[in-house]
Length: 262
Image 1: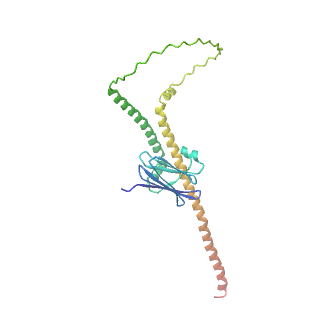
Image 2 (image 1 turned 45 degrees about the horizontal axis):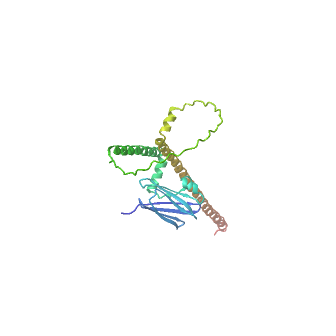
């Protein structure tokens, strides 16, 4: 059975970066720059980090089910941004690939993507609670045998006389009466259920950040394509102008001949 291959590539600061990922569980990462191999690495980490002192680093993210998500390039010196997973420049996935389809879904349906990610965070919380309840139910119905361990008889230790220490007259500090602050009930509820709420909130915040990131990268790619189009336009214009000048010169050179009756 052939292994699935995911390819990302992009030209950044005049250097052509190319990443090829092969495999599902244990993946092989091959990173090349300008056609020269930078490194090859095998790992099953869903957040694989490829680091090179000369060329910077790549952060390659897959989902928990092994679906490719994105590959982000960080220039040398962006260590903190690379560790946090923010900033950087996303490589462009191969058209028609799973990563390209995922990227397009995020851009076309941001609300649905945010809802799915938030529900995923809620499912993780509910799954943890259910798993804890199942473990507690099993332990409550399992009777463990009583094991009598033979412990040695230790001798009684003598009472040691302790000296009477003098009391220290500490000064009395008059503290002001603090006002009685009543905390709202919703704040108490959030504080009591924070361990269940924060994964859901975190999933929602990360989803919003990913949407903004994808839109920013798409806008940057559109701007790059526009720059390339503008750079190629003057060549066409110049060639057209050259043709027109040649035609004009030909007409001018032909006029004397026509006047001479040739």
